[in-house]
Image 1 (cartoon, one colour):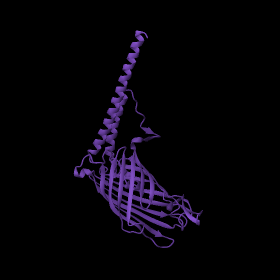
Image 2 (cartoon, one colour):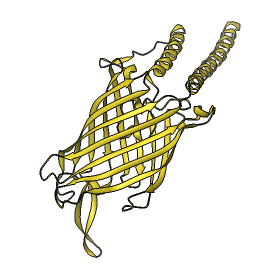
Image 3 (tube, one colour):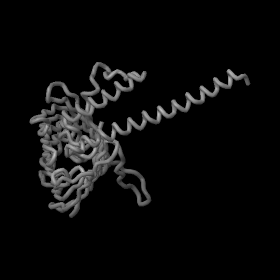
Image 4 (tube, one colour):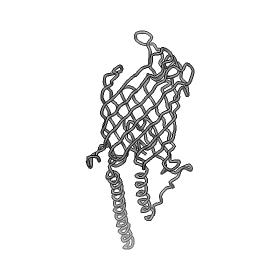
Length: 341
């Protein structure tokens, strides 16, 4: 090998090593920036790394949120996004170009929401997607999809079994809820009021026998949610009416809850991965029975809850306690995990 070729190979090797060191340094700086963002939010007394309460999602306050914290307030989101813009500018100066921040004519920075996986002792497993888009100062357009998976809410069928014909709960016609509304953020996002209107699809409300018919738009659900979060205390009140609108219009329900809690910042606790601790009360009433005329409370829960902050914008919440009604069970439990975006 000639001396020139040898020198060129050595130079390339040195450049490769320098490039690897530079990439490692960039990765380290990115990690520090992310940690600093998390510390900045924690320093304001919120949910350890990501304030998982924008009045549960600061607007998309359907049950999707009520059972798990929320997102950063608008002002905090703006601060984090500004830090990220500065970070991206640093990349651009080094030759990296930030991707466009708009998609289909919408500003991505105005979107917020999350995905929740939830399970409790009555409704079973549920999956909820909620989102909101800022349409004016302190006003968000909100929308959600709530997928109920309990076979008791679907269509049963009679099948052949080892002891003759028997009922199989099946999985057809499961209750599916979608809706939209507006969220009004007040007092620097400390208080939010979110009325929404949902459409129910399935086989629960409209037939004398649950599951006899599977229908689109078998019912409607007007709801309203109030959220409060001042950095030290958090609270939520939710009320929804599930009304049958088709065919026999068999049954209507009322679903409501209230929860109040405090945050570690109230006691000046630092580096504690807990969003809040408090009391959860929840009530479900069989409000109208147009078939047998026997409405009444189905469950009446009350008990403590705790919500933990997790990495990657996750929050884990668990509540348990007594069912004061006691018909379904003397106790209740409820767990949910939510990822915010």
